[in-house]
Image 1 (spheres, rainbow, N blue to C red):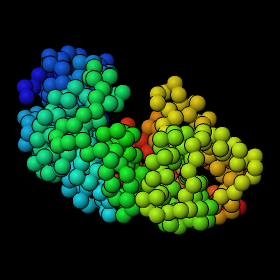
Image 2: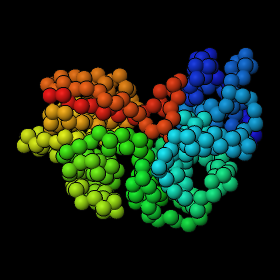
Image 3: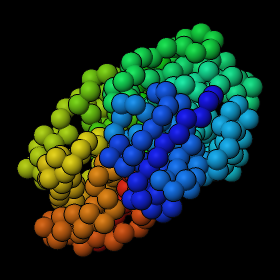
Image 4: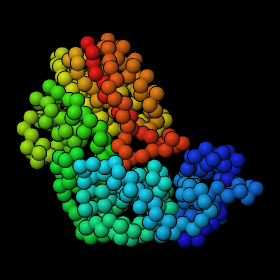
Length: 388
């Protein structure tokens, strides 16, 4: 892979020196390279800052791969994959589903690899990542010997890179629906057709922790395929799980049956409407989980997102019995931790509930984020206990 050259502005140089990995189009002074190629990154004086993926379409024009001006070939990527595997061997326990490569968090920008037992699911979300896809597949086969590798490149993000949206088989045959264990519990997964790369894996550790604190009557909101609900089922008398998607609810029912839990009841309904109804009926719960989709997709959505988070958390706090547990999350990267905490503080005051913070959690350890890059820290999760 030939290396072109990109000249960056002083502001971009400061950004890289501070540890950020992205350079935007406005800070690229000049670039002589083919779309998706690896380029040497320099300032006007000739100082080298490393090598990066170059995109001809995205506002994120450069994604830094290494701070060294060195060849970026097969052996380079082999080493990065081996580093990623070593971390997962340390942090993943009792689970066959986990994130093997978390893009910038694993120094492999715009590359995601999720593991579903013997199936690997790959996303290449930039022109550069797309160019190295054949090398990635070759190395994944060599290092992990999966039965199948699928690509879930149907993400809308690829359109920003001028790349087609597609889902296909890169190796082996269509795995269809498979059963894998998360925290020891079996679930159905569909790597080629499920949400994201087949499921939402970033709450794996949070679900296990919630199961250790949950009790009584539980309500799981935005339940998708029932992962939180089923983790709660063993500890709770009964669990009610709600999601707008009928297909998600049907999958949740199958997952409950697979685990032999008869105390989980699923319903397909708008969560806002269900919470409003239960607030009016003064229904009470001992455990509530709020795991909504990202309400703020861009900055223009932030105010509406805050109103949405406020409403669901206000109603949940009103529905909890004294001593009750609220597991509340936001996966909107634009709603940072401070903003989310301030919102919850004000909402608790409005609900007239005294609240303890039992745990302040984030995305699972197989989704590492960089201190120098806030864009990689997106999932905030609070375990709150209502005192009275």
